[in-house]
Image: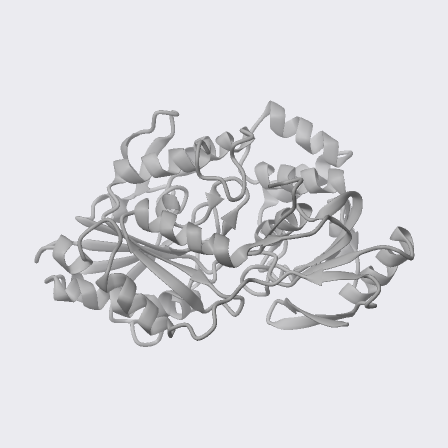
Length: 418
């Protein structure tokens, strides 16, 4: 069977003999669904757990709309005009609204990237800026000691609206909801304190209840004062499949339930070899983002098996700390020992990667130099096909191969991992 995997803005192709193919894990997408515009309009008209946005605001209010940065596939340019029209219907003109791109710990945008995210129709009409972790206002502290330091433009706004997509997150349970605030527009200290909580066994993909990271995120959101969210679950083509608007927790939970229906996919036993792609750009813009697909794939591979990860990484590793932690270690086990002794942003990603490398060999098809990949305990390969042929030689004539084309979103589960 010929398989196409998105790689950056291109594709990688692999031929998998039928006798080896265990399956291709795809999202369960609905037939005959509404257009993106219909989904957005309906979500705004019938919000969950709160009044309509236009009824929450008052003339003279200053509104801030927090939306995703360039590393996320959320279609801000499609959604923002609807949100702005809703604000206008409540008496807030566009000059009283500011769009803030939630960087978290990511790099700043170029002007061209901001224009792409905002869209041609809005560029020049609406004020926009990146969040600034060095210019924050402390609004309080969570019960777990996380300072709620929020970028000034958000802290000083009267109305705070959060946008984003919902998919599985390897320690926050799911993306979306109050995650736009924590870590989206928070200080380095706040992000570090929140992310330390990932050491808990309850901090896992698909888990909301008793997840200390998610609970801390949502407490920070309450302290900040999120008035309204609009979240979306995207299909494998990065189009809106379903939109959810309203209360920061209730609307988010409804979106998570829908994400489970679409992206939580059962596997009948684990595979010897898992071939996975994050789903192309921007999900594979760097190794920092590509890691999420690796983490999902790890749930479907046998211990001692092989994962073949195809992520372009056009911007390299994406974190000097991530690269440093992996390259300085003698083995993946040493990375895990280090994270248990000390926590550092970027190091947490290194530990997540190392945890998978302890379980399985990982081939990496990327634009990273082979020497860099090897130094981080990956096996570099030029193509998925090359890696697959080597993997089949290693695993034997009866090896099973599972393919996950949208590995940044699809969460495989077996009786072994729930």
